[in-house]
Length: 106
Image (tube, rainbow, N blue to C red; front, side, top):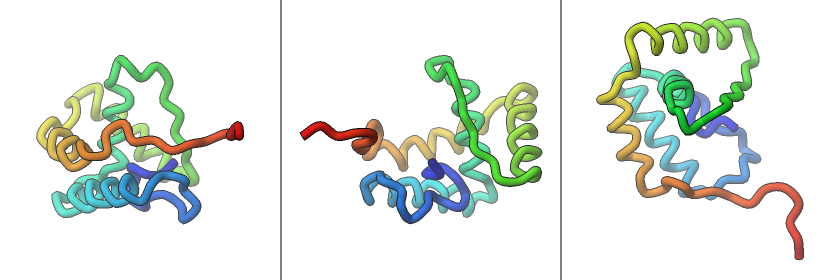
């Protein structure tokens, strides 16, 4: 839903502000290193055996090409482990933080 993308989530995103803020900090960290959090998140999802299905929203052919390139790079070169560890450290305080969704029972 955009939390771990270079553009960030839409205004209406239901996550707590603490989570949005941590994700912005992680994206800023990647950007300062000349890297893309979008690519890192995609590669992490694809390499993680605990994630059985990865659904990715794309709005342009450029995004399709970038995502395919990220997947191919993962299969040939692997993920940037140093950057991954740095981002995991930034996100550690909000790890497993979620938000209510769907129909709420009173």
